[in-house]
Length: 182
Ligand SMILES: [Zn+2]
Image 1 (cartoon, rainbow, N blue to C red):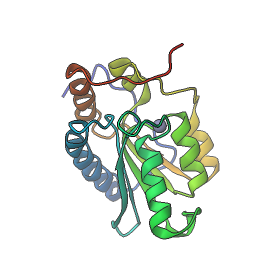
Image 2: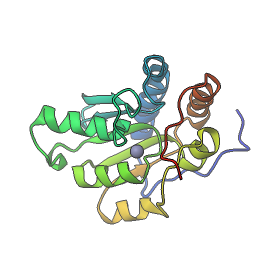
Image 3: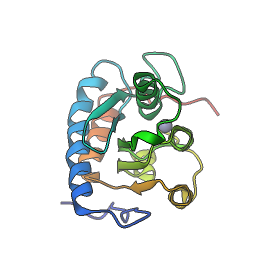
Image 4: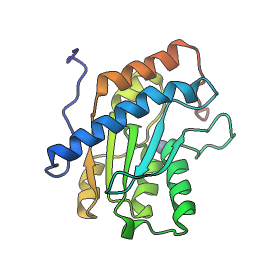
């Protein structure tokens, strides 16, 4: 396993091993499934919302390019689906977690905070996403501390090497790196 590009694990509280194990399983599954979505024109990010019993509530890929919408990130799509399914704008009574193949960008962090989701688990950290793909992840210094203040668990860098490979493949295959011109 390569370690030279690894950033240190980000966690804003102590997480049970059982939760880390479950998150690792889910994120590995999402990374594997992601190729199916990118081959259909989706962006290289996949998010899933689960309840505390392990039931899948919603899953969605990034659809910025194929749906012509700049805010169709995987997390935005998954949250929208979960709220529609449960018929509420406030997910907090459901004790839900969101699992994402890469660290959420500044827009998605806002959306997660307002949704009432209780925990975020992610794969590739933003600095590596930016380095590998050129996507701009936004300005979000020490964001996980703000989430802790609001009682939202954050745990990142899950199976980072696997996620980086998926992103590298997306770039190598010549897929779109969408962003506004500056
Ligand atoms: Zn985003």
